[in-house]
Length: 227
Image (cartoon, rainbow, N blue to C red; front, side):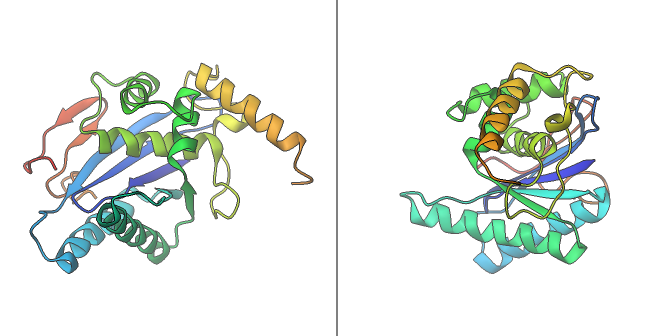
């Protein structure tokens, strides 16, 4: 199963593509960060993100698209930009006919670290370890996108999502068939939850405009500055 995950944002939008099969480790396909200038008109920024995501979906042909679920924050301008970028990602998936799964930040953290309150450094460290990368994905948006992809691989689409479950929830995921501590923690929590529930793009060159792409653990720096 191939998952393309989007950590939405207008200034930096993380895009991670990961392959995973039951009983096998998760494999990095590519990761990039789509950047837009803060002083550009909103419509142009959304268009740039849209074009990059549509190219990524067309190029990688994912089985599912995972998008971080947007929550309210004190900074209204930030959450509005995140929500707008999230809508663009959902639209890109819908246009391509790819099922979508939405995951909260705490779900993603719990999936890769075993704790829904883990910090960004811990998430990045676990993503680097799980995918066997030579170095940590940078910036944080890149690591967050990969963590989101891993979460979807292992947990599948949550209630209301369209994508089918795959990966560690059925015994797969990273580690060549042996569950990591994070996977084991999630599996135990999932079993407990089920017990009380009745029933039951990168561009053609392989790098998103102005982003940073990684393949096989190697880094190719992008041209645009950070947020």
